[in-house]
Length: 388
Length: 160
Ligand SMILES: Cc1ncc(COP(=O)(O)O)c(C=O)c1O
Image (cartoon, rainbow over all chains, first blue to last red; front, side):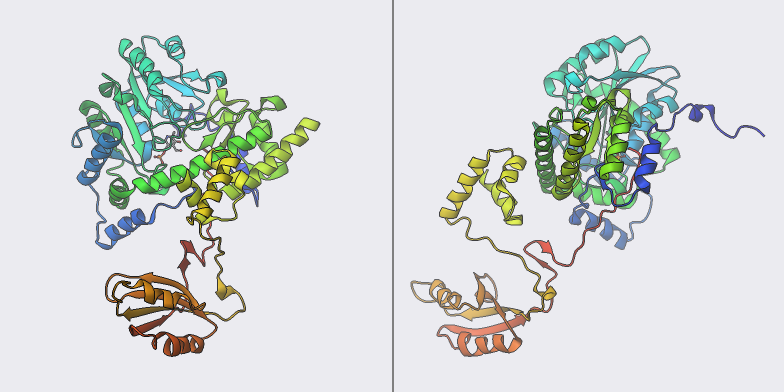
């Protein structure tokens, strides 16, 4: 028999920490700090619009690139929040989550052997999606001493003639690190000088705790070089609705839409109606959730300080990324032992790239009460380790 | 900072002040001072407990009563409202726009107790034109809290 499988897909390694997650899902009564999605329900008025749309019988495909009204609202939203101007008819594509948008962007832009710069630790899908599109992923290992920010010289060190796209994953999952305007300006300059496109994954743009999120597309001459990716999962607590979008210049969006049209047809209709409501009337919900996250973030940082666990202050997303190097264990060993002994699940930093070794991702998409119990257990656990 | 404190303690008046300081990113002493000032200024008027009486063995009946009154020259509705809110069985008194003037909430041990309060005390007051009593059959949500709700976490373990 012929091998039924594609060599291309076999090349992609399954997540190295699968074992760890199998363990997590088997264990009972675990406090989990491992989940990367909001704990809030989608705000009721948004859910209600989804329900109304079903009641009215809006159960058909939408146009491939998404409902006109939704694309208009996305354009208005980007104008209002980031002063970005996108033509809703030609430069916006509604997708099945930010995830699909990431995949489409690579597939629409990559020629075999093109290089994609991927800073890590970062979200797990960039590397496999880039490989599936035929790219050679070039990993930039971000450094703890820079608070996991991407530094201009780190980009320069990895650029070759083949470099086509830089993935810019900020606010970052798993580190919570953000980039500010000044830092983005330097990165923009490098991209312009070296003719590099930027895939800017801004899925956590609504969740920053220092200053308002800045998109690299806002920096002059960058909009045409940027594929801006965002969505509804994190900001509006809508992960299960599977809705996101990409904004880029017309020629890129056209080709992305082609793939989307043939592979997906269109993003879920019910979700699109709900998303219109989210953009129109969801600001106060986002604000309230951000305030809750911020309170929890402060709580965790203070708890780490009290147990003298090293952690830089993250200003975005809903993760903290404490350093566990002092215990002389790998992240996976630490997380496994912590899970077995204290029944708290966290995610080993190595799930997000080798440079996550020595760190732990802790999500604060959990109630303060849950976090409190978990921190008591963490404190117990590391006290035991230190006295050994 | 006041609004943030109020928002937090409105939901949980028993929150540990040290913890409140941490989550708001302030010093504990600042929080204590603000709360003390707000108590003095009458912004914070009390610390109550939200109780689901249905789950206790105690019999309790709550009613909403709409009251139409004749406002008094020079004093509007305030005087008559005062006459009403002085009764200890009256829980709340609001001046309302629309079809009637005052809305009261009243708690009693039984329907009979409340009806006798309405017929003997309330409706016989001078300036009270009419009343309409609505007994509450079930409380689903009170003070922003859903009373019957056990919130389940539906999130599944996924490999990030
Ligand atoms: C950085 C980042 N990008 C993209 C996604 C995908 O989000 P979605 O497909 O739900 O929009 C996630 C989800 O965890 C993420 O953390």
